[in-house]
Image (cartoon, rainbow over all chains, first blue to last red; front, side, top):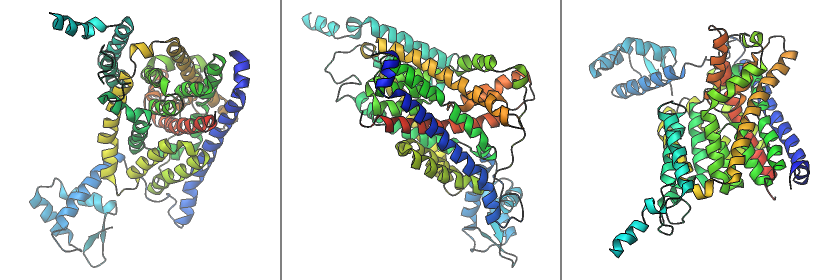
Length: 125
Length: 376
């Protein structure tokens, strides 16, 4: 069987129309949802900063930072849970990690290392 | 002497069939395209070499061929026929995909939906040409321009067509630089190609983390048959974005996807044994695949133009061509065509948004088609 007859017999028209409608419906719902997502998050975050939370970093940067965090965490494991930054820098230098000052600065900016308010710092879990 | 002649009669030189020789030429051409021309080498090299492996003539019954139950190739092919490799590839794809551009401009997702029209147009064409519904659905999905999705659906609906469908899908993905630009230029004016897209807003980490969960639930509740693909895809993306499983995401986007791609490409290539591959049906699949891919590209571009009728801030209609899910090939091509008109027009990030929504759209289509065919 060929041609329009084959399409009709196998319910092709209905499948094609339903298929297009379902795909569009699915992606329209998804796009509408994610279009509202940042607004909902802003509300949930108190709406104060207006920047929709912490901006996402560059993936490569994110990966490098994660790797640095892993290395520094290993070092800081040798000192107590709260640690002074100079001590961490000293241990990093002893371990031969590159650019400890700027890396620690990045880790602080990313909120991976946080101050405890008493002059010491700890890793954010 | 008799032993010597018996040995000779078992060699590939004696058993060679013209169809196998044709396929060896095709495999060599794939290797040439992949290595010398650098057209999608990660796909064409394993497939091309697989075609050579699958078309070495052998004595049937030795357990050597991919279609012989106890052969090594048959066991490796298991990952194709069950849909295992495509799911694993989707895991890696998810771990590679950055949805920030899509989250910054969600309306571009509609272009990913529009480009799927090629699939349904081809479904009708294949039915009209006399293919059975399950075969027609397997051929139609080539229009999504997504190799793993095509293989997955074909494995479920028409396993006997996996070879030609996979080869067609991957060939057209590799030929994006040849197929898409003329269609884009034909359907757009220079003025339209010059439209610049505004800078995308910065997307928060919270959005990136929530997106894969929300998208998984919304899409898979709609088309549960797409769980094997979209479940893995969004899982991979969640690994990437959640911030605590970077090691797993790194493995998924490197070692895991590479292993799956090697085995997928090699076994799909090996499944193109001349005697089962070179049939009139295969020729039809190639023709329909080209139609599907071209219509998918065209429908994305046309839909973008239609959207412009209603939008205050016009979008560059070239972006519609990136609605197919050939990541990142079609996004790159859109960017290059845009830059050919205006070297300072950077469309890549916007095109990636359409491209990633195309991946989601084609996986949903696969789920829908599979659901339609249940019971047929």
